[in-house]
Amino acid sequence: MEVLGTSTSTAKKPIVIITIGMAGAGKSTFVQRINSYLHTPTPSNPNPRPPYILNLDPAVTQVPFDANIDIRDTVDYKEVMKQYNLGPNGGILTALNLFTTKFDQVLDLVEKRSQDVDYIILDTPGQIEIFTWSASGAIITDAVAASFPAVIAYVIDTPRTTAPATFMSNMLYACSILYKTKLPFILVFNKTDVTPHDFALQWMTDFEAFQEALAHGGPGSVDSDGEPTYMSSLMTSMSLVLDEFYKSLRAVGVSSMTGDGVPEFFAAVEEARGEYEREYLPSLLKAQQERASQLQKAQEAAKQDSLQRMMKDLEVDRTGNPVDDKWEDDEQDEQDDDGELDVNIIDRSEDRWPGQYVDITRARRPGAGGAGGGGGGGEDEEWDGSRWARPT
Ligand SMILES: Nc1nc2c(ncn2[C@@H]2O[C@H](COP(=O)(O)OP(=O)(O)OP(=O)(O)O)[C@@H](O)[C@H]2O)c(=O)[nH]1
Ligand SMILES: [Mg+2]
Image 1: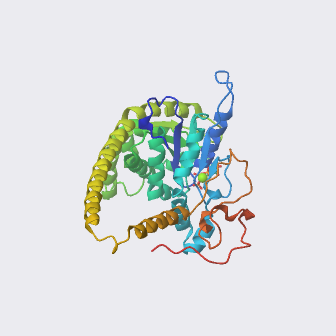
Image 2: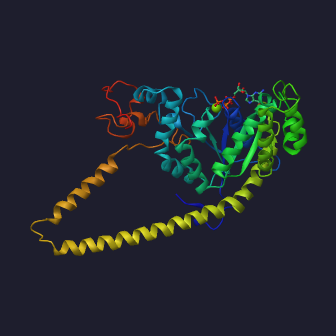
Image 3: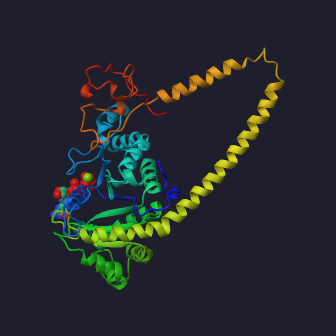
């Protein structure tokens, strides 16, 4: 994996669009829409370059686009639910965790194709918190953002956000993701064919207008004496916080149904690339340098330590402590490490679906022989009923 900092130029790198949003906001439809936009020739771009798409939603039954890498090829989330005795959300989360253990392979596949694509698009699971509040979501986001310029496309269900209180909670959620990832951020007000997003833009730019909407937000905003209620003053204070937040992002209105606003979205992505290079990249490089110097210090300390131990060993009677035995133990350990969970992620666009279903939920099955278990189309015919150990 090439880390961005080691490259002299980021100009040719594809940009990663991480699509995040509440359940049903239209993330997958949006990915499908921008995918079709990127396939469409225009007079200024007669030979468009299709994007590279990753589906990270293990529970989706059908995706409206051809994913290059699909989590469902690697993990069967229903099997995970059975084996770990989990509910649907726990199953999706564990499936994502299992997939993340192989994310280095995913990155290698993406790196291999990075010369041929301008955009890499990630579609995330329906339940937003599974991606935004899990270790695997953070690992995936950090890993892609360390390798490529990256931007968060936060998809909002515009018709469902017209109530000021709902709007504010959605914005607070967006705010928390911005501060967690620190990546350039685009608010995508989706479904503008149903409800135009003008009200949202007005609330974001005109604080008074939003206060006004809050005050007339229905019963509960003022008490019997005409004073603002607790909820109403809380919302006023929070909207002050949001006012600051709005300054650091861009907003576009899109209809994933009609394609309206998609060119504006890509203009915002290009701006975000500049922001990534100006703001995210320097702090990433600084963190990498700090980590490298810490690692160097730790390695030097470990070297000193082993040197001292070796000197001590030399003083020990060799017949009592045969060195050969130690050597063999180490070799054995290495073999065990390598043999574990030997699974390969599939790039569908490279290998046109060879019919070998690789399922890491079964990789530890005795006699499975590692990745793919020798093909078998993923059916249960040879499964002996053994299960993965539950997490301790
Ligand atoms: N009218 C309209 N409907 C839309 C638009 N975008 C998505 N939808 C509809 O919204 C519903 C949800 O869309 P999805 O793309 O599945 O949403 P999602 O965020 O991927 O859903 P989950 O992954 O299940 O959370 C579908 O019925 C879509 O047809 C849009 O721009 N306009
Ligand atoms: Mg979806």
